[in-house]
Length: 103
Image 1 (cartoon, rainbow, N blue to C red):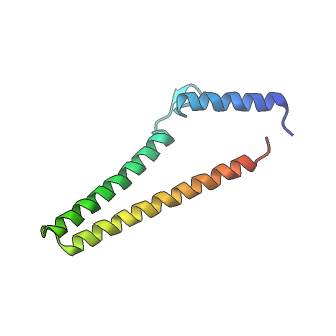
Image 2: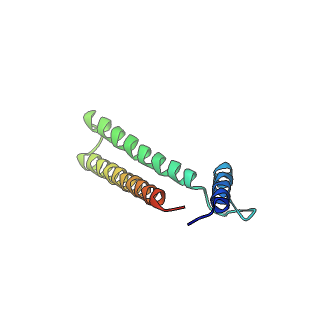
Image 3: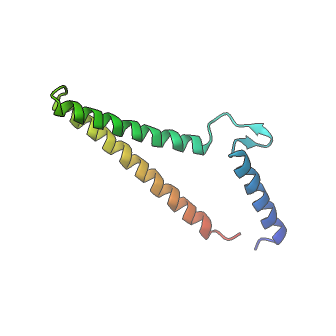
């Protein structure tokens, strides 16, 4: 069982991590991007795939695109959305597992 001091230190460490965005470890900057930046990039790539799919669909309706291009764009969007949903589900599951851990 954790003592109140250990719990207070854990909460203080978490507070410092949240304030810095997780970018510092031991007073040094980490080399990689933060989790928030990675998540933002992933959502941005899904949005770009959706925009490309929409543009291909509009081009096909006006007779300027091939059906295969539209099908490919829609399939890429489907894969991107499925991947994002899988990552989201895994993050939620991880959060729930962490919340079940005793302090």
